[in-house]
Image 1 (cartoon, rainbow, N blue to C red):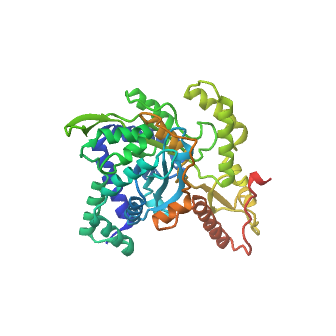
Image 2: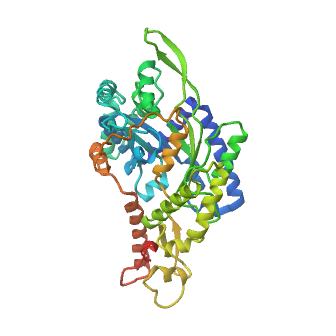
Image 3: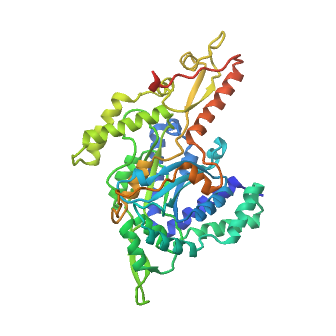
Length: 471
């Protein structure tokens, strides 16, 4: 039996090989990431593995795909469910992007701590909201629905194997090989000719809509390795002559703990595609839709920590409003804001209830009766705190990556009402629960505190610090 964990790891490897063949610059990105990671390990030693072993970091990938309909989204959920990947979080890029990005998204990933440690492969998956009148009028929605309804992204055999794998916890060797072959093939770039007229019509609305609804299949939009020093990688990729987007998205580089997620990418490359003209002729031309993204993951923040991050982001926007600044200048202003508002020590993140950690009883600890409040357990040396890695995404950063790689801003009619399509609607489409990332992080923290309580034989619950925002 090839279990879901092994299926996930094998699929991530195959997808990486396939994408590297399609987009050779991705291989350069992976090579540079591993080069930088090796240097950080030499410089920092064990400290470099504070947020995950180097084995995990080296193997880690997140992919991104885009689909057009609720039916396609539900099928994706079945395929990833076979690999122990479940929908986590809701991202509305319609609101997060300043340009025309008419999609809602979730991320399929493992939700169990052990599964994340074994292989944290995740896929950020976006779906068109064709009923949103800010982007699609009634006629275009109808024609787009007809086009999407006529295509088949995933063969029935793949879906049957996916359902069997999820129900039984895995597949036998032969079925696993067939499943992995079909699943990888489903995300290859289609070689079928693209109708130039249809693609151009959608592209006038949104380059993302054209990439989803203007072609015969879906494909990997980007595949993302993890790096331990994203600033060093950004500089090194530029030195190799690869054009990067203008900035690193997310928190600034600063002297305190790494929080949340920092992302950047090289710009979408011109890829040869076949186009069908109005007269039926087929010609070769280029499209720029796929790019190479890289990420540096930090510590998962609590709702209070996220509120602080959002406040600082708003303050940064206000401070720089109307100014033309370089990425370095923007980072400097952001870092100064962070220096004044964000704790510089992990212990302060714990006591301020700003970030998530797991807690572990130390072998050498004080004598006497242990206290029942977490802050004292930490300060007196009863337990240690290990940061929980942020496994999810930031809507604004995702939108920033998307926007930086668009050929045009598209058209968004803000005078029309948008479609109400929230987390509950997406969960209904998927036919399975949409996990709340905060609840997953809080559950991991609570489980560790339960273990601490048992090991220290405490007769009452351990008291968590009050959220800093509530003080």
